Image 1: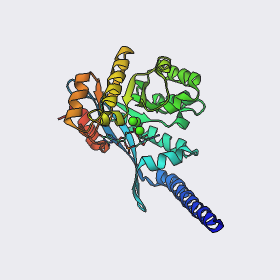
Image 2: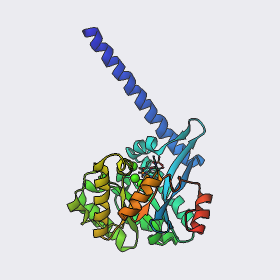
Image 3: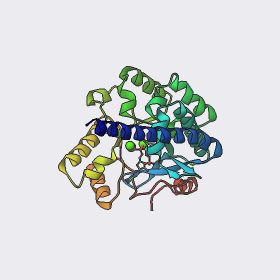
Length: 274
Ligand code: C2E
Ligand code: CA
Ligand code: CA
Ligand code: CA
């Protein structure tokens, strides 16, 4: 029993080493990546229900490592988020989005912010300086945050969002329905948009519960005068069901995959899908 016990401890230790080693690789690789130009933003259109007009683009981060190939943000964002690296990374993303906005016609760019970025001291001043002071209208810069970012300190988050919205920035609540924010809390936050998490859209045609959740989010959004964006639209059936349900905006592979800047600019100028 003792030997087995020691065995388990040893295996556990090794996997710990492994994950720490992986984390270190990502951490050191990532700050290099910023300097070496290995990062890129791709842009996925957000489309209005009726005429499939492209109203905005979500900016999504990509890391092409010459050593390891394509590393998905789901892999490295959580690691960056645990250190101050997220600020360096986040600022790079903001600057890129601002640069792109200076060349695009009228659409907005929606930028993902992690909870740690959102909670940094003087977040508002930071955004104003990096976006507005560079001549980009706040109406064209959307801040995407998740419920996790605002749940911990709802008072302070509400104040931050209020001030940003006063200045004209757009605010979207991402992955809506998966976090902890109660419906009661939602009305305290200054928002423009609710993004229905992909898992509900995916489940819509499969189980009644998901369809019911999608419908209630759409109703809630309408009642509060918000845009509602369905994420992860992958089929014609989902597209039609969401349009019929009155979901105001759509995003997903069925409409378009995240694309490089040049293609997004082309689409931005064309204004409509297809
Ligand atoms: P998210 O914000 O929920 O972004 C949506 C994810 O769903 C993206 O994955 C997108 O490529 C993917 N997606 C879009 N349409 C479809 C679809 O129809 N089907 C499926 N299966 N997936 C679809 P991606 O680009 O791998 O990003 C993963 C997550 O990484 C994002 O989830 C976001 O939380 C985070 N992330 C990405 N870029 C940034 C960034 O610049 N900053 C921060 N803080 N987080 C980022
Ligand atoms: Ca997002
Ligand atoms: Ca999302
Ligand atoms: Ca997500």
